[in-house]
Length: 141
Ligand code: NI
Image 1: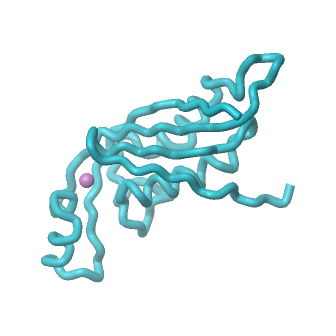
Image 2 (image 1 turned 120 degrees about the horizontal axis):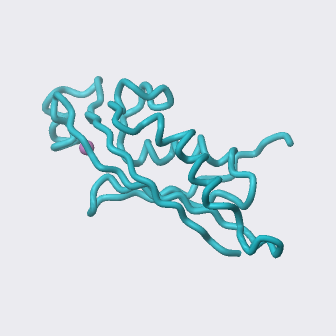
């Protein structure tokens, strides 16, 4: 088993808040990310796929195909967007790095056709990042 990773970047804004919390509880819970008019992050996304090396190609899968898939399914939909309002698959969720990573997994996992999705790593800043290793989504085929 071998693991390969593609790293991509995107810029997006968000505001973390829970509409059922008071203003004070929102500020306490989310800190700077609760700024009423939002703020931006330069996100770094690392997608890791695991699999066996195909002896005919020497690869698990083509990194160009993986890059194209991630660009089409994720980056083009979130880059330079407001994650609270512009992104259909993030509607009605609090756009924390945790929630974003889980949604990215759910979008990408069914579309990996060589190897298996192993990990989504999402950096919100140099110091803060989350890692999500979800389960393989069972499909009837
Ligand atoms: Ni933030």
